[in-house]
Image (cartoon, rainbow, N blue to C red; front, side):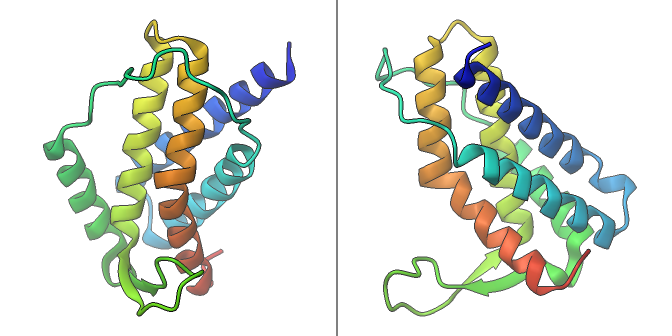
Amino acid sequence: MSDNAELMQRFRAAAKKFIEAVDSAPHLETETFLANMSRCMAELYSIALSLPPVEPEITDADGAPFQTDEWNELHRLLKEKIGPLDAYWEIFDSTAKKEPVQGSLAGDISEIYFDLKRSLELEESDVPKSDLEFDLRFDFRSHWGRHLLGALTAIHHRHIE
């Protein structure tokens, strides 16, 4: 198995583990859920950092977008689960002197969840492998990686183990 195939296999496993951890939220206490999230996010981030730059074959390939109703339902469920621990403050771009903005753990986790689900569904379609790998790295670098770091930092500051 090539290094890239092994990396993709590890990424797929970490993504599925994250999705399963989110899906288990209704059955867990808040602190247990957030501790699971932090472990899953740390693993996912570590693996995603190794995703190599790849040129896509098809520049307009795109998976089906998630439904707003699905996102809203997951966000509501997670916001209920997380309760008063949901809101946190962060500097959106720490390289610029800006005012803090309010983040939401429920929002961050929902964004990561649906981006990963979309990627796993795209993998099962007939999209060229290079397009999938390009999308994974691009989405990580431009979108869900930022949500992951914000959420992981917020959970860390709450001293949840």
